[in-house]
Length: 175
Image (tube, rainbow, N blue to C red):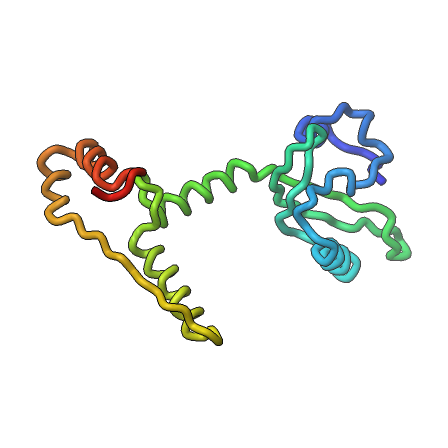
């Protein structure tokens, strides 16, 4: 059960200082981790006296957020565990930046479609899966090449090129 927290902890989780005393840490469970995750975490904590990793927890308002957590066992003179000390950092912004970088690295910002590198990776994965399937299914790959499209971007700018590509390949299909 929670014995003591600091003001940063209560602020981050949205509680008043007196609300947390006596609660179990499971009150913050997000539902994103299964029993085996917690079993492994506690097994390592009991075996080594510490656990460190990323975990998703829940604020008082129900918002689920990622943490980088360090959990340490406190022992008495007889080496019996008497308490646990937990320190964590909200890594929501870090996770958001990672997601944005992933998007930039693998997807076209205009169309949202996979770029060539990601496309080739996904295509290779699909082809490998089909080759290993008991009953392979026919596949087709369509390559759309807009001849001299670079000339549009170079002559009129990327904004015009973006408008042309959306108009030509927009939601109504390719015309």
